Length: 531
Image (cartoon, rainbow, N blue to C red):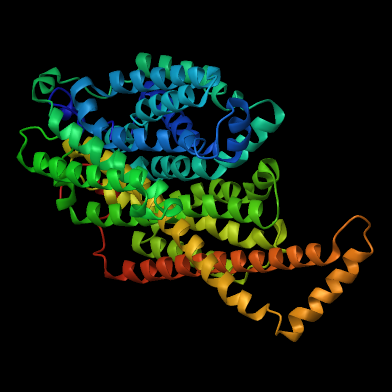
């Protein structure tokens, strides 16, 4: 979002592009990509280390999730807003402010001494850092000629998917090797370098300060209430019985009012905060839909695997990180291949292969047992990593490749928003299913583990005999407790299998759905034409 309007001052430069790219622009773009990597990585980098942060800040178990939630809520508001801001301020100014603010907020987060300070600093970090993400997507489709898209699109696709995937791994290593403060301090030096490079090198467009007088404050208020409260409802709803919880209920009301105000302003304001006209481009609309579902898969599995390994296998954050690095490696190795294929293959076929590959990986996980470890998780993770990259590149090209330059900044923000909202909706549904199906399976399994069951009584007697040989234990109580734990574990496993089956159906259906999309225009020529 952040990049593309090429405002009136710079629009003529776009058609005149040749295959020659000034080295200055390439370095500027690489700096932007690295800034985006830091911003997306920071969503997940703390997820594996929340226990360490909780201990360090003496926070309660109810308060500590806000370290994540505050970041997500603030970021989801900034991502669509950044399109307007980059048109008004220029990509250079917006990206520099975003990188500098993100770096400063990272340093502050490392100095937090209580949970309230941490939540405020994380919100600032998420809000300001969110301006970097759409800027990169818009720049990629604005400053590079279509012939370079096979290089650029896999690069941004890789960063957008790799960063959240390796976040828990990186976070686990950092918090084990040093301390949780370094989860934030690692951003400082790279952040300063990115800020300096952005200010010195970005020259893609000119500011249009006249837009400030047309800034739609009511639209901003509506969007913040709508998206911020929706993120909160989706985050907190599954664990708090949805609208039965007072805070979730109030946020749902504010979300509804905010949505009405936001959409009213979008269609009536002279310069709306977010321009939804990009959705009139059929390719962009389909690309955004697929981006939404990719968000479900990307963030859903980044959440599911660590929860399984922590809850069933008893892994700590470092062991989880080591078990899950395979997906990131698969993405990294597949990125150049998907770039080459994007020039030679119908993007619909690429997406279909990606979606079916993803569905195969999740179907594999429906055969889960409590003994599954690195070896058993290897193939599903490789399928997940490779398939994600095969999907992302054509989705990026289909969504953004045929929009005119003046639409790109707003469109890029909307496109990135759909992926984040997909993640939020996906996590909410996954959490709800895990909780509900766990209770269902526990009730069903408990029916078979009762006094009337010969098999259950035999198992209990054997366990009691084993415990009697251990001094100092009440053998019968220990055996009952152990048996209850086994039932709970099996119920938990079955609920994981249900979620993986649900994801399999979703992605297999999407794979079939790609057959019904119109073949997009040749990607090589997509850079400037409208729909």
